Amino acid sequence: MGNILQLLWKSVCQPIALALQEMGHPTGSRVWWCPVGRLSALPLHAAGIYNNKGVLIEGFPDLYVSSYTPTLSSLNASRETAVKGGSEPRLLAVGQSNALPKVGEEFSKLKRLFPRDVLTIQDGEAAETDTVLSHLRDHSWVHFACHGSLDESSPFKSGFVLYDKKLSLRDIMQAKLPNAELAFLAACHSAASESTSKTPDEVLTLAAAMQFCGFRSIVGTLWTMSDSDGPVLAEKFYMHMMRNGLDKMDVRDSAEAVHLATKSMREAGVPPHRWTTFVHLGI
Image (tube, rainbow, N blue to C red; front, side, top):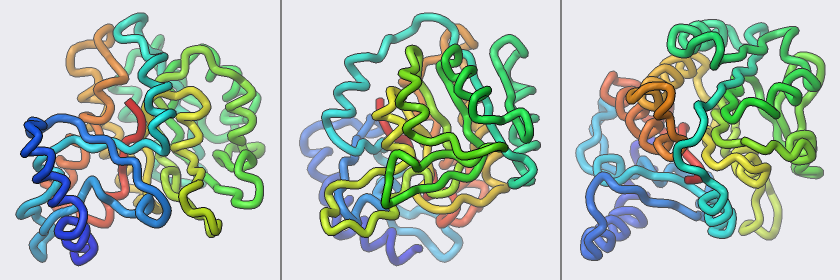
């Protein structure tokens, strides 16, 4: 992983960082990546030089807050429909603790952070497709802690593995969710493309598809995450989102929340291959 991150830094990201600095783009501000083909599977946001203990010596994470977008048009659409402020978000947490042992711990942390009237948890047998779809209509934020799957032959059959069956992208898209803002996908390969298409510029991922379904910000993973990292990242992420109070939570803060949560993991000595998998898409 260290060699890949260093190669990305020297070949791709350092020249971009230098150009941004010459343009006056201030340190700590946002940068959106719109990679295509195989480049979309690489952790551009984490490019840098690391020592043998995984400590960052120099690199992109110390310069800018990274987000990704599958297309510029989808990013513009998310910006146009976003409403700053507004009503207090409600969070729906959906999981399969029977398949992923750390989901119970993850949801316990959410319970400690959010009051009962803001948080709804659907776990195990309670996480059936129809029930989850019904709750999605009146929850603007959703947290999936379950396995995800990509169906290359029929992309809209891709989705999230729940108790009774898969909640497909088609199900979510057809629901036409009116208040969709934030989707946190603690699911395998949620932001990764498994496509072997001969047209590599055209890729569909679970995270990108959630943006097309109307969600304005998405937290996803580039490759399989460690089950034990879910509770850690979720706690750090939502603590930042709630730092100014429930009534001040803003989906526009989610990129910085991912950035700071992964920085905390990095500083705690978590190996690069684990924290670099987490990415932000959207506004």
